[in-house]
Image (cartoon, rainbow, N blue to C red):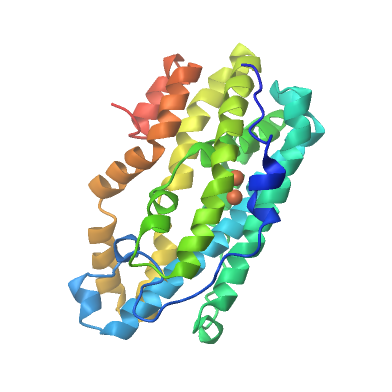
Length: 305
Ligand SMILES: [Fe+2]
Ligand SMILES: [Fe+2]
């Protein structure tokens, strides 16, 4: 696939060249769409009153921003630096390698804004810190890496970032236009979306080239890996959510019930399929889904029938 730079107008359109978003928090508006916060609207949480709902919503926004920061630093920037330093290793053009440095700049800015946003939201400074755990995706990546030959470690990271950068999650899609949500959050997500549209085109090219440039025996490994990486990125972090529900005032049994209702197998499977739709289409176009080792893995991960 020919590289067509999505960065021609980078100096004009990238949000790192713009002022910080307007961080206004209108009283009466929510910090996050309620249906995206596990437990909000559930009778067991309603019984606890408005404080529980507000606390859960704050935790959700906090974790969304902490996740953004870690994903940018630990995954997307790390992968883009590898691409910048050795584009040929992944079948990429010299220009694509040079421009990976612009992604590093964009992502560093996203991490900065994510943390600034949290600092600006009223009430966050009084929130007690939750025990810091490693994000689920990092634990998952480490586990997958242990099962792979060492020379595939970089390919694992590039594949994971290709997946995360081509997925359009429901959060990024819906929030900027959601009138229920405070301007601070809508503006921040909108700015992030503007840059991510360029990254999406870039990583479509990366997936094509990375797959096409791999040897048949590496494709045997890479194909099924894509399916696992999609689930790794999109599956909910149940332990983290359980912590929020306990903090909001539920006992362990009720927290378990709320999680079972919110994250039923059917609901998770349906949302993973909806969110991964553009990436699954890409996997089809690139030829990953035709690969005899890959297709059964996508079926096993319940991404296709
Ligand atoms: Fe980003
Ligand atoms: Fe990105």
